[in-house]
Amino acid sequence: MAGSVRSVEAVARRAVQHVGLVRYNPFEDTGSNQSFALALLDEDANGIVLSSLHSRQQTRVYLKEIVAGRCEAALSAEESEALRRAGVAD
Image (cartoon, rainbow, N blue to C red; front, side, top):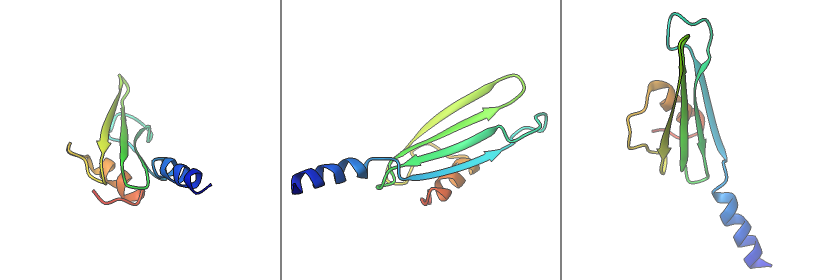
């Protein structure tokens, strides 16, 4: 029984537990907050920041890996805010 509990705890530790979302309008020619930065992190602050930039002509999607609350790539202000809202300061 104790082994089963430890196994479930190990799996749960890697599950998404912290979420931070920022919606914003990066371009003046669009009329709403269709762009976003979304942080999805586990208990150890490992996970991703998914960003989408929406304009009239196209939508671009970016993904950055987060390890222990840090990212090797530069984060935008919105991505940093999504991490903060998820409970992690970059």
